[in-house]
Image 1: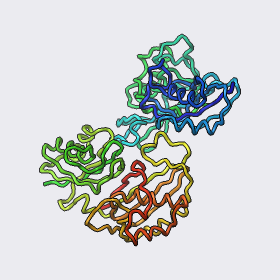
Image 2: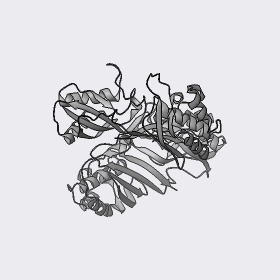
Image 3: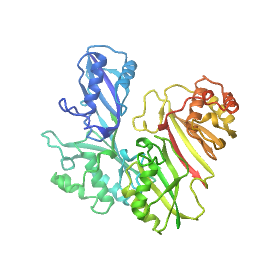
Image 4: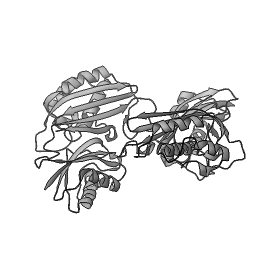
Length: 244
Length: 244
């Protein structure tokens, strides 16, 4: 068996997220599996580094898969891109050690959330940012972000139900203003379902002055979703990179 | 009568171009006229600085219109954006002297054409650039551009039939490379139907080495469309600004 690692870019707007959902869902994973199965002439199953929600984009999603066949990697990239819809592109494929697994081997992920505060929305970027024309206190948001750093139980900042651990380590949160755009960049060892969007919604409420920065400590204590902020819309979010 | 000047941004992808076509066409002009007529409660007819083709975008299209009513300009911007589809945005409206006309008063227009030479297309910019993964000799393209500057009869670089003058003055052509992207910026006193796209196609053929840079002199001499290059696809083109 050969183990392949693949980097994928996609515009999530048209899809019900990353993960395959039986035979019905229009998902990124199922599109990629169909194309790779076609090229390698066997049933291919791929594992993503994580599941992105419906409408969320990726610049550097990583996936792995195994195949009985050796196939020239640059040729597989070209063949895949010929067959994929124009909103999904394979950026690269390489051979990996048999132990490599896109999800289990991942050490760190970086997500970016883009907010556009201009009064008038940007027609060219509207599908890749959240148009929020209010003013935000960026200093207060940065202070709040400091409370989110480190290892915590992020259950209250998530909507999925799970029996697994909801403890994650947030390594950095960078909040950068460029003109009317606000870029929130989160790096951590893993993220729960909807976690970046709820953290962003919470930071926005802090920036609006509707919530104190240290109110997130209460969410960590109670693990209660209703204590956290709103879920910011999917289209502003992009999975930037995964580190192994 | 009050004369208004308006700046409009649009993603031309879904539209059959700027110009109203009876009652049938899905055009930018007709969308704007419907919205403004609704706000001002009278039949509004607008004039654009020029017609952009189907699929061409605008960052700073200028239009003018007259109305019997005085209406607060920032309020009209807000009302218009509430009613417009998300791929058209009014950036600003101001009062002008009664002599102002978006087309007749225009002194200079700037168009930009974006070519992406990367092997793999950019899924986020795919609707706003031409994916051309070949290599291009930018130096040869710049030399060719020098022949295009100045006042010439550009009939051979156009596809429309007209009895009016096809003489135009090209003031500058800037060709800038940034990573895999090539930005071609054209400034002139006016542009004929398809002119920027045919000039771009011709410059690409020069960059490919398929055509000599001075072959454009032959197009000026013969005024023959078949002597010029191919028509580059609409989605790479954007009307950047209009000067008065």
